[in-house]
Amino acid sequence: LKFAAIFVPQPSSSRKDYLSGTPEKHPELVMAAEDAKEATPGSVDMKVTTKKPISFYIRSAKSFFTGVESESGEKKEPVCVLTISGLGEAVSTAVAAAVTVEKDGLADIKKIETSYPDMTSGGSTRGCPRILITLWKK
Image (cartoon, helix red, strand yellow):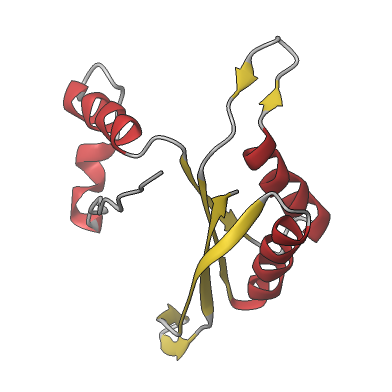
């Protein structure tokens, strides 16, 4: 299997008013979202925080690779690529989820990116650690 990375630009803050409203107002946004789904099938981004326990994210990551069936009987297919990202204190949670999935033999860690982006809070700018881990299904 070959995978291609596609860059989807994020809207600027000046376009917030454009993005607000119903899909009927902006059908081009619905079409763009559908195109993005088709362009990157089997790829999911999981953002990790410290608000939920590590076990929640481990269970979620495993279910992305094994597939799940909802209560209504709808089956969600497994994904091929999972990208786990964590910011600040959630870095260790992201690492724990990725390592557990790899240890269980569900996926391989293919890429680890770290950065230290500037974050502004209360008028001051400080650096904050960030990690991005890409897992591919075995």
